[in-house]
Image (tube, rainbow, N blue to C red; front, side):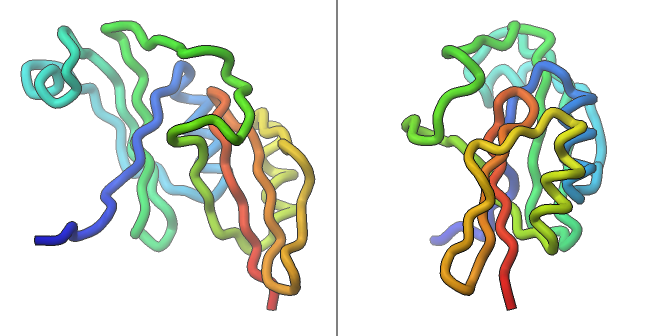
Length: 146
């Protein structure tokens, strides 16, 4: 038996509206918002008393989604500063293909995005960069060159 697909990537946030605005500006579409709580949420997460707000955003092609979650209870915890470097073990970024990397970075700056380094050219294939978005999330951007 094999997996069918990757359904979504979950990201816990503190400011749901700011996170939604950031990813919508990036070009994702808000699929919906909901409130989650009860026994199934507790069983699935291994936490007691789960009560959270979620928002699902999807890429324009409909193939990839992010589930943004803001925990009301139990309170979200932090394992350190939000500006961790890229080489930390574990999940550390999501990457999106974009049409115009410079325009994308410019549009995301008002939403708090900061370049981690600079826009780099990989041979004659790609322009690449990492930006730090809401909640310290590292978002990779890749523009394929002709």
